[in-house]
Length: 53
Length: 133
Image (tube, rainbow over all chains, first blue to last red; front, side):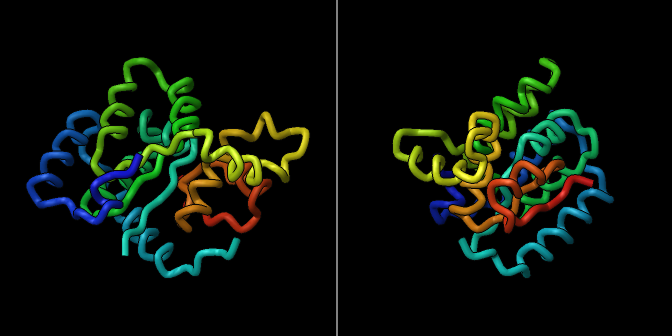
């Protein structure tokens, strides 16, 4: 099951806002320290070369 | 280019329970940045078995996000899954969930968010991991 994103349709800003609101309703506001770590790790992982199979 | 992470069982449990709040932060930032979360269906089942019933609503929301892809074991994926399981030899029945996670990581060349890389590395030593704090 693919998602709109993987099929080439980026999310619109209202969609992101809607889904963040829903997420906040069930998990609460994100931990800022963890959010910063997640963003930093995303950048580091994107810079890594994927291993060959 | 689209990027993302594969969620292993500990990551899904962490999202549901909020133990470290890291998995929740990863989902939050992925939504903001347009990154994909891949959930192997068998890993979701294994995680739900460890999450209190009153936290299943969080997993329902995770499953329904427009950045979430759920991968299933189907007749078509069986050969690739079996090849991924081969290093486990006679222990293969106990590595089926790890194999589904590793297969997703191999197919998309994305890292795995996990708290226990051991079973993944037993199947694929080169798997890239984003460790839970």
